[in-house]
Image (tube, rainbow, N blue to C red):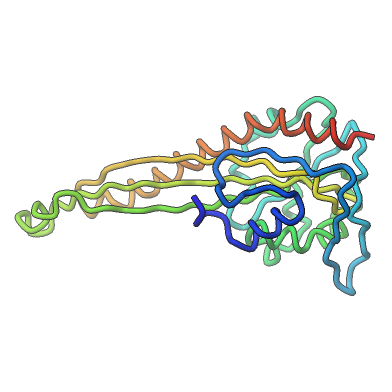
Length: 231
């Protein structure tokens, strides 16, 4: 699973949250309430303090990376994410430049810009979501391809999806914590024509599994965030 999360993301989150995400898979982590964090800023946006400032009930915005389309989260998913002390959930992709949020480390590095772009919404926290997918294929019984003149080409396909979510303060940029989970799918294709379909369906199944598992983990994660940082 190490290939699924870029090394820069691993190092960045480890330094801020003191966690080991290099193993990926399933995890929940919450930052210490006294931890001091610096937030990268540029001259075009206002600086933010990088200090915890959690108010509940919280109005939560959700921002997804370019690799994880917002429509991947259904209305039922959003209802499940709306836990106790979360008053509302607002997708905010339309307010943030898509060219600046390809993956998780982009959004973390530009969280001051994200805050500046969404300040008018009156959010309390923002959940940054990103997904990585890795697929491998292995030929099975190669002689069959030769004997069938290439018509039969048995291949096994394995797809792994990693979904990660980082919660930040919508006013200060403080990172409250991260939660993530993984999904795996295995499939078999007998011909070249089947191969692409098996790959696509495997990616869909792995992504669905990762999303469902993360949503199940979110309530415990949110309770831990409140326990550490609730004002």
